[in-house]
Amino acid sequence: MPFFPDCSFGPPARVFAAIALLGAVSAGSAVAQTAPDPVVATVNGQQIHASEVQAMVETLPAQARSMPQQQLYPMLLDQLVDEQALVAEAKKTGLDKDPGVARSVQMAEDRALASGLLAKLVRPQITDEAVKARYDQEFAGKPGEEEVHARHILVNDEATAKKIIAELKKGADFAALSKQYSKDPGASAQGGDLGFFKKNDMVPEFADAAFALKDNEVTPEPVKTQFGWHVIQTLGRRTTPPPAFEQERDELRQQMVQEAVQKEVAKARAAVTVVKFNMDGSPAKATDTAEPPPAK
Image (cartoon, rainbow, N blue to C red; front, top):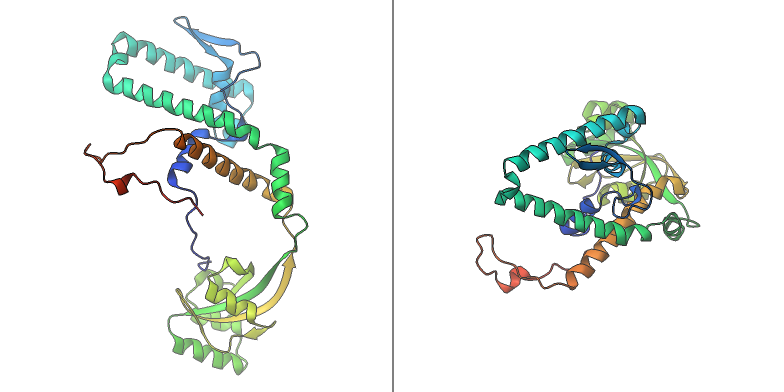
C-alpha cells in the first residue's frame, strides 16, 4: 500500500553506530563474568573458555540458537579452535607485527571497549520494570485510536477521476470500477479495499479526506496526492484499544536502548576534546567541526 507518509530521520548516525557496538543490551555480555567460566579447549596452551562459545551463540540468528546445545556447541567450539590455529600460524609468520594488522587489532579492541562500556552503563537502565513503566506512561489508560475502513480508485488525471465519481453517482459498482481503472494493483485486486487504517498511516491529503467522509460516502471531488488522483469511499470506522504490553515491549525496549545510548555517547563526547581534519589531513574549517543540533 503506497500511501504511507515519509519517515523523518531519528538520532544521528553516530548514535546508531554506538547501538551497533552495544548489540542487544538485554542479551547479556561478556563484560563481567560472575558465573564459573570453565576452559573447554586449549590450542598450543591457549585457553578457550565456555563464555567465548556462549558469546558466539548470542551472535547467531534465532533459528540457529534454537538448535540443541549438544549439536550447536561442538560446532562453535570447532570454529574457535580453527580460529586459534590460524592465529598461531599467523604469529609464526610475524603477521602480528604487520602495521596494517596491528591497526585492525587496535580498532577491534577499541570497538570492544566501547561496546563493553555501553553495555555496562545502559543495561542496568533497561529493566523489565522500566520498560513496563514506559508502557504505562505511553499507552495504559489512554483512549483508543480511531480507524476508518476505506477503499479507493487511483488514476493519473483529474478528468478520469471525475468521470468515475459521475458513474458512481449513477449506481456503478465501486469494486468493478476499481478493477477497471485503478493503477494501484494491490488494492484494485481487492476492489480498491484498503482495510482499516489510522490517520497517520496515510499521506495527509488522503487521510484527511477519508476521515472526513461519513460511512458509505464517496468523495464529491477527486483527491490529489503525490501518487495521483483518488476517488475514496469510507465504509466504516472503529476505535482500537491501546496495544497490549506484550505487543509493544520489544519496540519500547529498543527505543529506550537508543535513548540511553544517545545519552551516554553525548556524555562521553562532552568529556573529550575533538579536533577534526579534512580527509586529506588538512585543517578543517570551523564550521566543519561544529556538532550537529540535537535530534528531535
